[in-house]
Image (cartoon, rainbow, N blue to C red; front, side, top):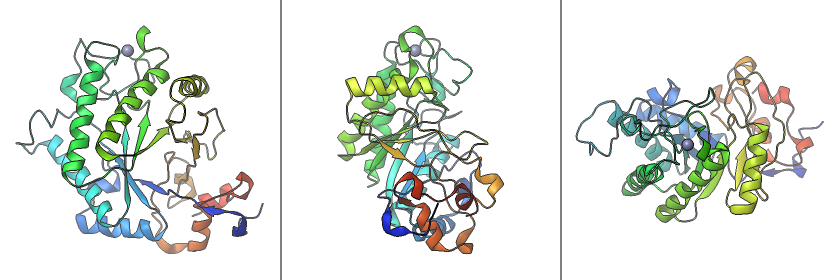
Length: 306
Ligand SMILES: [Zn+2]
């Protein structure tokens, strides 16, 4: 398989950097100047979209408190928005990852809590319970309003059904369809704020049954709504199996880049930051960021050695 013939391949339109500024990731600790340098580096390597996810684990509702305090929730919000503002200043597009039924800590009560199975964790509420979908949409209305008030326009919204997410109650079965209905409402709300956002899916922890059930529902009830799917790349696996996705939904290719091949296999399903800087040729890296027939993609070995 040749990876040097670039005549037959085209640059990917979207090359997204998922940069979560929590869980001890680098982006959580970067000072503003460091983040500027990091994103300039990512831009050099060809990335054109920055995205992050507002994890609310252990956080109270910052909007109820009206930002009058500066505790952990406000600090988290400040960190997230500082990085989004830094990305916008670099000219990168902005994307937001959402896990729709994961909410602020105080919003999980006996009247709202989701029914959990082992693969469902986080601060989860059941969207089938009275008032819960409205509460979730109000959370996103406030978050989207926060972006808009800061002059930050989101160009994409990516939905995750698990980690954190899920409800195993009878009314929410199959969860993947309940997630789809909920995420669709969040995305429609986002479009009220930002216009024609791209709506994408993260297949993190999706099963084969999830792919089949979601695709059947989406093709029947929301044709064309979901525009891209990032497949799940499990830990210890370096390529993914092609699974059913909605008609017209683009395949979002995962690319894991890390300092060592050993670490590369454990990275998440979306394009991540180069951490080894310019120690390999940019031409080879560009090859990884181009789309073409599957047999024109770089070999597994080449991806892993970048
Ligand atoms: Zn439920």
